[in-house]
Image 1: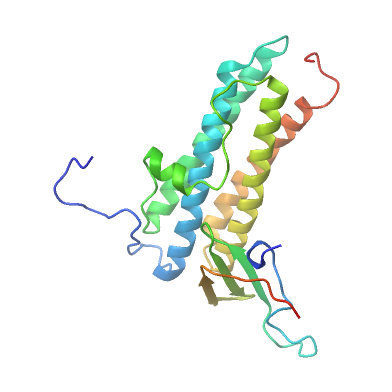
Image 2: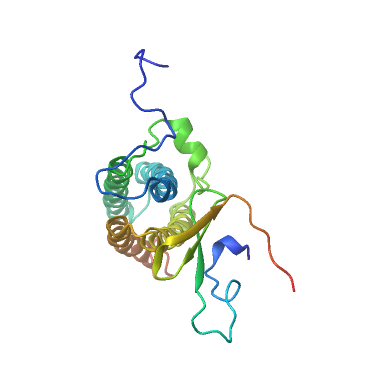
Length: 55
Length: 176
């Protein structure tokens, strides 16, 4: 599934740091993804391009 | 066709709003709401088509239900348009703009049996429900709680209608 279609708290936080920000991603307009920091309405960024990350 | 010489507000532009929502945040929400608006009108026309064409033993109740459903969808679309206008946006208002912005795929012009028609409606309801959930998260995450609240209330109605259509599609029916 594309990154823009699901919430993902893991990708931008380190699991062993409980105070690190939790990031979710939502679809906005067509083809647009908005990444938001939980609990901080000023912590966000939108992108027209997202790619799947492989490890 | 333009009927006035000076454009008051350009389509696609985002202006200030009186509710002190940051313009850049408002822009994200307006774009999402214009998508919801466009999807709503695609659903509205498809429900209307099925309302006109339904036949068979159960036609009267389904005909009435579909009218109730498309009226609810139109009411929701009106609320969405007014909300996005109130936070500085320009709601899509022409058929080409709505068609281009929509993310749901309408049925073609041919007429199908009511089971196929309602299945297509349920599919579109499902896509719209998923989109609403995303946009509720988006609005709430950006601090626009009024938009999130409006979408939540509309989502309850949308899911109720999807539930009714799902029941119509059960095996226990007169229509074969």
